[in-house]
Image (cartoon, rainbow, N blue to C red):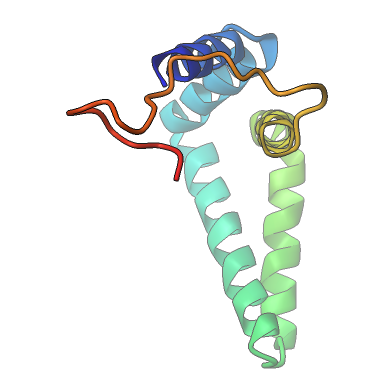
Length: 129
């Protein structure tokens, strides 16, 4: 099990060292330190979530609500920091999703030799039943 966790740590370090993660972290910091951009992004996300939930529940979206999200969308589109943040966040999240898919469905032969604890070892965690 230690071997698997070491590989997971290595993967985490590779991701953290990637250009996309570095840019995502930089932009997150810029958004956090820019009150105008932070508040605008929070309002946009909140309104988007509200309308999404309303739509999922089968409730109609009122004209004034559509107008509000349109105005917020235009403001977001005019803000270069937010636009780059959203694009970078999307690339980063897509990377994480692709990694998860590969973990769930790896290609190639399983690596059977590892230090995973086997049943019958006293005081050890049993991992295969």
